[in-house]
Image (tube, rainbow, N blue to C red; front, side, top):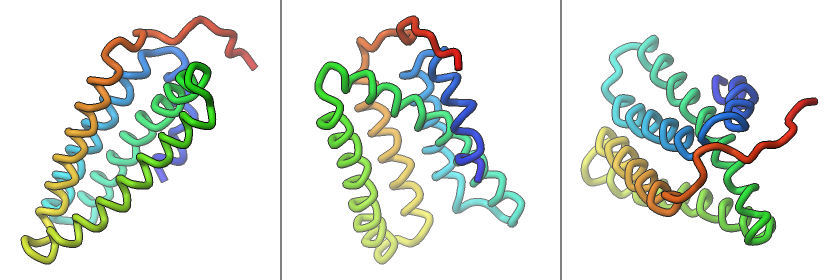
Length: 144
């Protein structure tokens, strides 16, 4: 629920702050939450970590979408969004398949560790490819 409620305010921040840094921050916090999740000991802790994971997604997703929209004007909007969606879908598919194998052989905690490692790898790739991305969005009129 936190991701749904907070995407609008963090989307507004993505129009004013460094989008790349917002994606990196949200991705790192979300990856660390995956690592933390199997070690919760109560329902309250589980809700806290899950909420923190939702907040991290709310930070990262609008900024990532804004980056994709900006790149779409250069590469073509349809092609850019197709690549963005394909990478998300392939990540979910491969995560479930590999996670199932890890669960069968090593146990549930290792599935979350794998998710954390993959989150850090993906964040590293993101940083590498966007190392020259402008620090702040271009000036634009965002008033209603």
